[in-house]
Image (cartoon, rainbow, N blue to C red):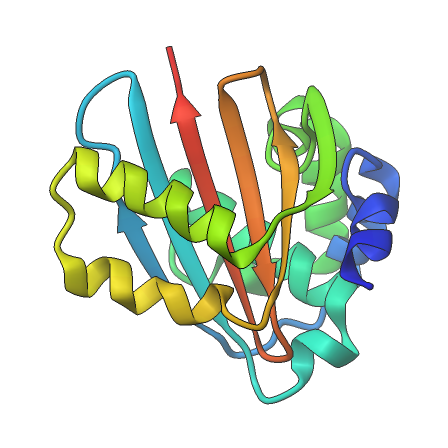
Length: 179
């Protein structure tokens, strides 16, 4: 279900940009897990908790808000970045396409469903490698269980981005070899 919607957004910058500039930001709780402990192999896991059924009823908007929120965290945007007027955001996204597109495009677009077991194993493999506390790993497993789990893609073979989608949450898993 969600994969078909993702195929309309991911790697389609103008479609994504249109959603972004018309986005009504929803309240959400975000938790970042930085498990990138030793160059060049690492993992980032980010959970996004939206209001009840928001993701189910507004997946395109939830996905774009997730990408923009993740970008803001990575780039250390100032607090309140989501209050930028639509016209200003449109100008930024039009003048700085490579910057914004980097967060929503993938050189290797895979769009492949993955099983809960596969994604959990992938997370545990990285967690074990860097002695991530078991309670941190256990905190993200519920986001996978009963979710639609998809490998979106990566920028090259050893790079992977996964997404786990439920009615009111999205989890983003980025892992691989980054050199």
